[in-house]
Length: 122
Image (cartoon, rainbow, N blue to C red):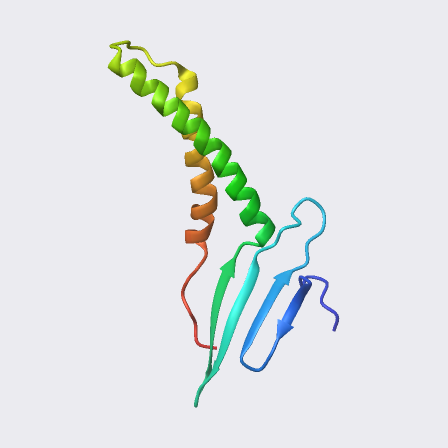
């Protein structure tokens, strides 16, 4: 029977490897790329899977982290200059770029580390 709950995928599958990604429409257009190696065995087949972000997402993250990184570095230099001059009382705006960097880090690496990395025998 036709299953309406299956997600559509596109990609390449050969006898020893595959590279697929989920077809998404709407707001979440950039789906991760799933790359795998198929290793046949005597009793079972082992499938090793790696997930990576698309080239477009890597470019966006590089630009985003570069801009926020420059702002954080300049803010850090300003904070150090204040401390050297003996001024106290840092402004609340001084923490904003560091919070943005931290949240971006949590989004990128938090989702990466929450992905199960265990390989299971099929």
